[in-house]
Length: 237
Ligand SMILES: [Zn+2]
Image 1 (spheres, helix red, strand yellow):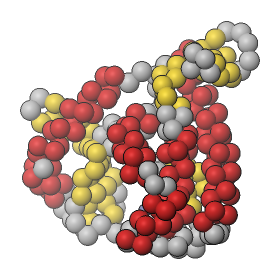
Image 2 (cartoon, rainbow, N blue to C red; image 1 turned 60 degrees about the vertical axis):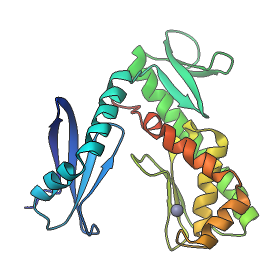
Image 3 (cartoon, rainbow, N blue to C red; image 1 turned 90 degrees about the horizontal axis):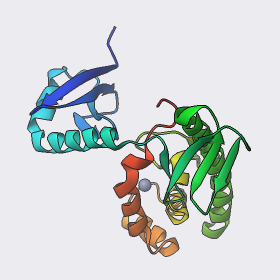
Image 4 (cartoon, helix red, strand yellow; image 1 turned 120 degrees about the vertical axis):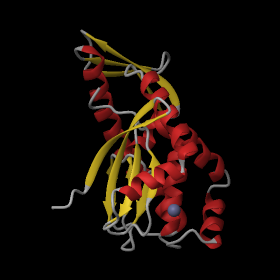
């Protein structure tokens, strides 16, 4: 029995962090990615475990930089705070009042719950439903504008992807896009719908994206700059 995923504890120059080692039948060479709370090494299916060590050693500077960033991310994580529509909101558990209320003026979610963790979990579920409703409307609007047809729309929770599409015309989005500014969510919708015309990242693809979203680079940058905050957990804190 081959283990598909192993978790290893990394210690580099006194800094500790988790790294998941995952095997993929699609991977041609070892790769390392930095997620919000850990590093992820992807190995080709039959590569030996030492290929992971070799890769981490060869990228020691990059690895250490991300380990420090992850340690800071873990230390700074505040479960009573989240991004919503690109702004910082507070999460406040309350004893009385409605189950879930948004105070737009003070940017506070007031949730009838026992403690911050329970309140945060409920905020996550509400925002996920809200994201789905917003994405359905946006996709519908941009199908018409771009003259494309989406076959299926799914909304998921993903650690590193914002959107994807399939050859059959299905599109998938990360619900956490609702945490980003609306124009950023829209930029990802335009990006994936543009893939229904060009299933690649060719010049023609980027020209089509730029035609519908002239500020797409700014929107992609916002997402990249904030991605780790937007990936903060809602359920298990
Ligand atoms: Zn793409």
